[in-house]
Length: 473
Image 1 (cartoon, rainbow, N blue to C red):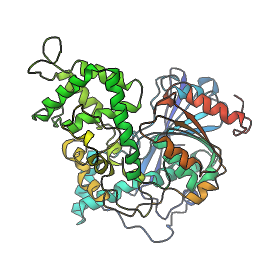
Image 2: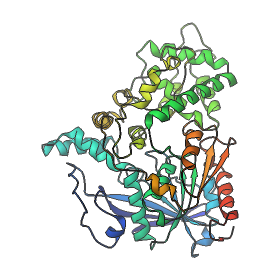
Image 3: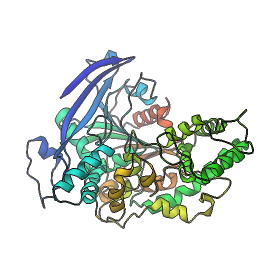
Image 4: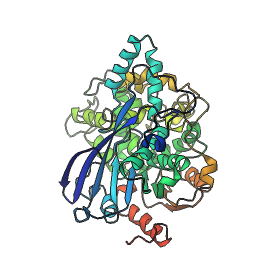
């Protein structure tokens, strides 16, 4: 392995690694490339002007210190997102599932392409690509759009399969997918099921066939319900939120990074409502919204600097700009209808979400065109995303026939009240996936895996069913 470093954090032994993978997997197969065969099969894909041929894939391997020299099975973690990097554990309990996982596995934590310490995609990346494409006489926006297509699930699963084959001896591994990691799981099972011994997913089974419009038709009612629950718990916040929204609607309010604070951006704070304890986090944010006196809503309230910094912290994606950039593109599967800003279209049908409606309704995990005009970290992506919203050709993601014939045990935690990934749509998909075993619970929100109970439940359930080949608990 291309080991970069090894060290300990409290309770864990850690190794850092990096390998090279192709930017563009079209016409290449991980198994053949692992044997040194670099000839592409089929029509050679058009070159992406200004883009590199290969990129770095960074990954960590962690285990309990007492197991450093033990031959343990592998568990690879598929991070949520899109655009999220793998956890940086402070200890086994800082991300609850890790403490249980290292009892049984050597855990592989890859940063998906474009994130973390893998070759990152940022505003700087996009600006540099545009300059090189323009210098070569190509359309910069088209080059950027084609480049971004290479950071979706079909490329991610090929990276991981190549990693398994070249760095772990081709030994099948168990997968654990959180949120978008469940999308990655079904994409992996659609393409390389023999590489997987068993799979766990948490709040992340996509609807197959995929449709962004269908997703937001289901999720906007849940966004409204979550907002109403928040106001029911903290009824005094109805007035406070409305007062803030009225100040913002009057204009000329800027966040600390210089970007405008609009009511639409204020509504993005609802993205947190699918996690616990989100209502409390929202309540305490608005608790210090006003500068004057004891912070009550006065006749001419002024927003506090601390509140504005809190809004920026909770709505910026400077650390992970692919999160909003790819948010709707993860539903593009092969030849498909244009996505055309599905969340914005759905929001436009629902008057209760208007910026001037009171009480103010918060939106959840939904991206909008204005974000690429107002948010500095997203402006370099604007032209490319505009093209991608109209594109109809993407790499195929899911194979429904292969999923129906799936033999890999798939144990899926389905959170009944999940705001982000509709439980009904998850169960509909799982009903058409072979060897799928859903566990439906309303005890957890979307981030349930990060506690200490969800992974343990799934692991014990798989053991009891004999799906982990008799591994000792």
